[in-house]
Length: 95
Image 1: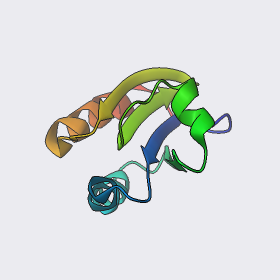
Image 2 (image 1 turned 180 degrees about the vertical axis):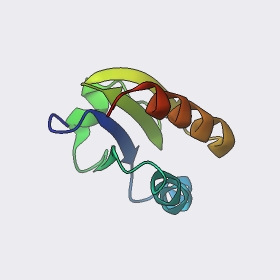
Image 3 (image 1 turned 120 degrees about the horizontal axis):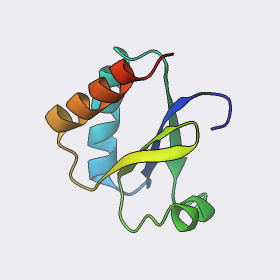
Image 4 (image 1 turned 90 degrees about the vertical axis):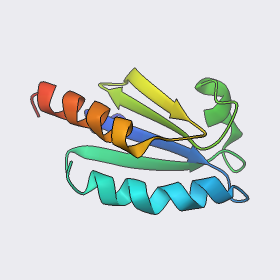
């Protein structure tokens, strides 16, 4: 996550049906924001990520700017409010 300023960390698990439903919508949303790097991590394959970022449920989305957490969304993602938050951040930051 160190080579890009804006990073959206997406933590999921293989057996999570909600995770599989959200991912395509998230990828579609991010096509409007080319400077956001999406990083996908499976919490079961890389458990250190869940521990490091205090993730207790999946899916979890965490937005970082220069490695600092800006916000997080967990389990039930409301895409309308997520898009508004991303848009505000994206337009406020000089890329």
